[in-house]
Length: 61
Image: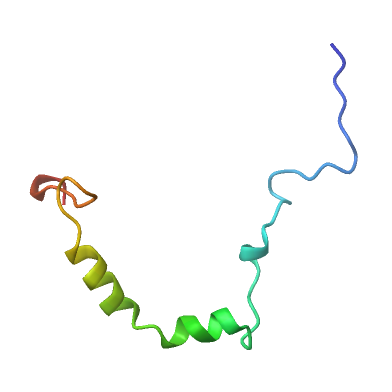
């Protein structure tokens, strides 16, 4: 078996995804995220959950 280590291979600590950096404030998705009422959206979304479909049972909370 040959073990080869590339000098150009990033270590896991060096690897960064684009989402680990800051986004530009004038990005259209950043602007959109600031006008969405996230708490209301989450409340409506969670109200549709049932124990059989995503909601935790009372003992799991």
